[in-house]
Length: 168
Image (cartoon, rainbow, N blue to C red; front, top):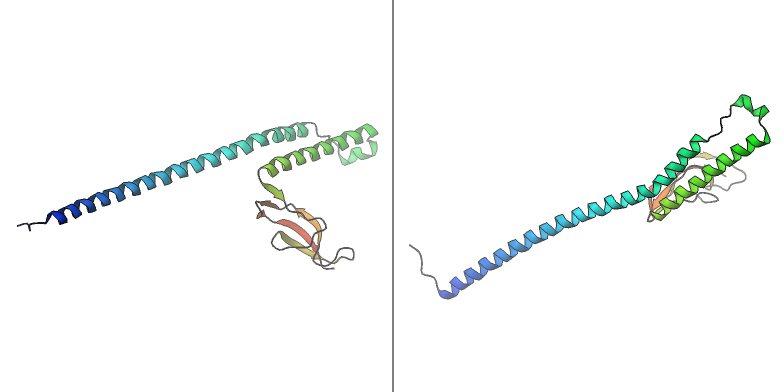
């Protein structure tokens, strides 16, 4: 047997049920919103990657063209090289340096920056020491030479520069 309920209690139960339904709808809408944002975020990342790759294609094409025109010289040929041969070799390597700068520019526009090493003190946050060597010319704890470039994105190191460090 049911207890008789007062009209006020009945009204409150209806309000509670309505509030509960509203809360469930809001939770569902928020869940859908989160899913939509994640899909949009993934789409943006995919398009950003695609845009970057599209900018890299001409650089790859330049590398392929350069490799097709690489001078074929062996050690036995060195004594017989002409001034024209040396000019071709010089032009080839000049072209490779231009392609390198083109690549660094495109990656720089994407936020990638090379970590400076020339005339820099060693910083364990930016550099990885692969050797410590005595040096009269270079002060202690300064970089002697870069072995591999290091890179940052938005001031976050993604690859430390591999360097040789002076003991002094």
